[in-house]
Image (cartoon, rainbow, N blue to C red; front, side, top):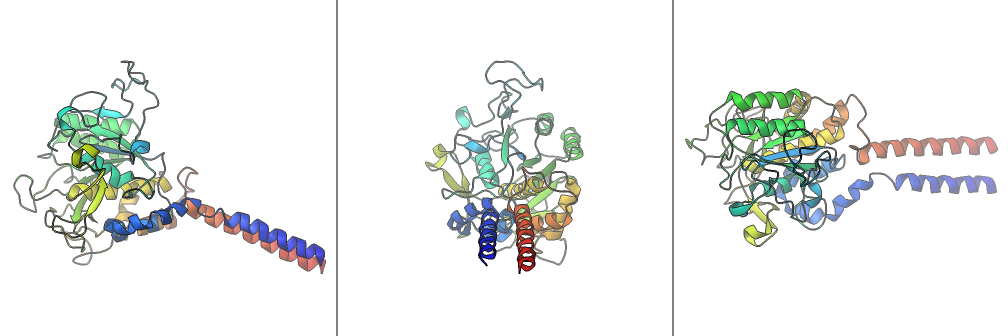
Amino acid sequence: MHKRKTVFILVLFLSFLIFSQIDPSNHSVDTVFAHYESSFHHRLIHSKGAWAITNGSKDITVAVLDSGIDFSHSELQNTAWENEDEISDNAIDDDGNGYVDDINGWDFVFNDSNPGPEGGDEVHWHATFIAGIIAAPLNSIGPVGVAPNVTIMDVRVLDVSNLRGTSYEGLGNAIRYAVDNGADVINLSLNYYPANDTYYDDILYAVSQNVAVVSITGNTYLPDGGQEYKSYPGGYEEVITVGATNSSGGLADYSNFGEWTEIVAPVGSEDDITHLYSTVPFYTYNSFYGWGYGTSFACPQVAAVIALMKSYNNSMPISEMKTILQNTATDLGDPGKDIYFGYGLLNASAALEAMLLQQTEEPTDSSTNGTDLEYKSLFVSLIIIASTVILLKRRK
């Protein structure tokens, strides 16, 4: 009897040790529950369900081709991509990629190694806001990113007015720079007019390297004004094109639409009571956080969910990930795909759950979170318990 009691206590102890390790990364989700609840877009796209599977991997990089990110923001300091093959400030192209001292990206507007806001454009916040939507960390400080553990690459292509700051060729070079330097997803919250083969070829190059390119349907205050105005690069078939909804789930009054609309994400509008908050440079509004609206801020939500999917299984082809996004979107408007909402509202949780069902190989250790560990721990624990029961029966 004494031996059986000892074995029983040992089993309980081992089971406690095993189950106490289940899904450790998700404990932090509860610490930011108040911030999660105050971020209506997270509730609508079900971010928390996705985080139960993965909140991202530092090995996955999202390139933000935009106006320049303020990485001095405390919430973004640990998200910045770093070119490990380059030595800072030695005026030498150490890695031979054609860009000197590109430690944290490249500025294709001023053609230098400082892609962040500089000089007279310090007040511009667009890219910093986008970076926060993607990767602001899971903590109790400020708004949380959709993929809070991924890396952000800063590539500047817009000027202070959020207008095209570089040529078609410059945009193409920026896309190719992102791909060649390890980007897994490219966020293009911008419009170029009209369609142009110069950078379209670079989009095709990105897709051929299994890099997702995500862009916007555009806003009604763009040239020609009409909501069915087709803009680029969002108008290209190879690009995942994102529109915006208001906080009630209707199409936002500024969001362009058309047959090229792939999916929508919640942003809100100026008249909404609820707004989308994210990171901004402090000198912009004397605050580290602000709110904004526009399809520019729907796009990074989709880019971030793709980054989560790649964090779980980066070997899955972009075409399959795109199909998953389509099939798991929450249908809005007319049944099936329509010109207003595309396939529907982004659903992060359903997309990651589909990854679990459709994966063809084990995710890498760096990209898994709690789910695999939970199943493996449960399996080991059941083996221990079953073995102990057999042992006890034999000793009766």
